[in-house]
Length: 352
Image 1 (spheres, rainbow, N blue to C red):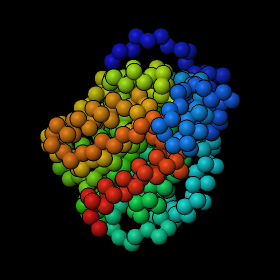
Image 2: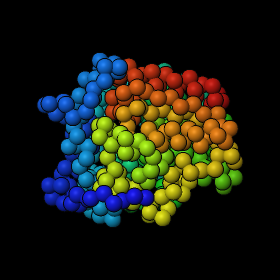
Image 3: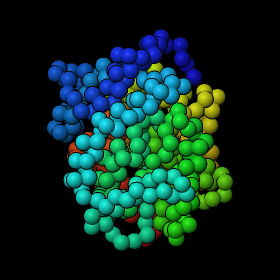
Image 4: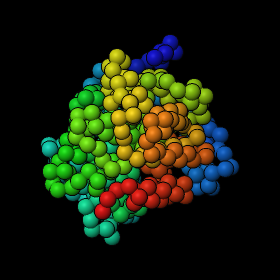
């Protein structure tokens, strides 16, 4: 992996505050000028207004060094506080039933939508946040609208964040949750999995691990802007570097990648599933992404790896949209269209 770029100082003091602001400011405070990124006229008016609020300074702020446990704890705790109001609003809007549980010792939020269909189908959710940020609670903004629009019970896995755990332990936690659902009487035909960003890479990696261990696989996989290669590999990491309003690799995503997996492990298929051998089988997969994100190459490369192996896979790209727009801007017309397509895909491939 090429790491010859110059590195800004590691986040201590004011720099750490900036790192925390990377998450908070980007999604909640509108810069006065609104000119940091090109706003295309080919997206909805609502999306244009949302995009105009993103800040370049917030996006490129550094995150803690991979092994700075105390700094990560501080960032993680403050994100939870800062995102609480937005997630409370989502729950109030959709009124789901949410139960805290543990499945094989792994904490989860069991989310049942209002008016959801009584049935056995379950959608396991692995949240995003570059493996080192967010939680099942602070990503209700993804899981709750998804439960509502699909009508499915969503089991959101509150996996241990990096650097407090590494990739092998974290993928095991996802496998354990699925195994626990089977022990409760579900079948693999009734279980699907979805994840966004790092959660997309985690979902795919965990399914590959299940397959390789002879445990079978869920009936379908949905990946939103998956971090399918956590190394800085792929054309769009360079070509969209200055266009992406959310993602930045040097000392930001790079630190998260190193916190999750040692550099020598970062191209392991369970870590970066774009390198998986899909000739051995994989569930039907839907991949969604936007044309304004550096993870665009991840989506395209992952699609090609599946398609070449003969796996049923659909690549669904959104003009002018940014990384996981379906999550932080869940009420946009584009977000509603994306979830509608997910619902239709799951209806086709998940048993009742």
